[in-house]
Amino acid sequence: MPVLKTKLNNEEKELDFELKYQLSLTTEQRFRMMFKKSREMQEMLQKNGHRKPFEVIKRK
Image (cartoon, rainbow, N blue to C red):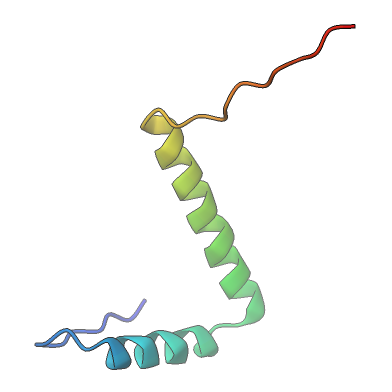
């Protein structure tokens, strides 16, 4: 994965770099990356105590 290094914080260059990188990937690669990051975020949230909230079950 390419890394952008700049001396100053330039948002326009960062966005241009990110767009070029994303366009260089296939649709399948982008989806794999998205699903991988989603799993990583879910694992991180669970690890830090942010689990799925409990559900209220209505009894008849």
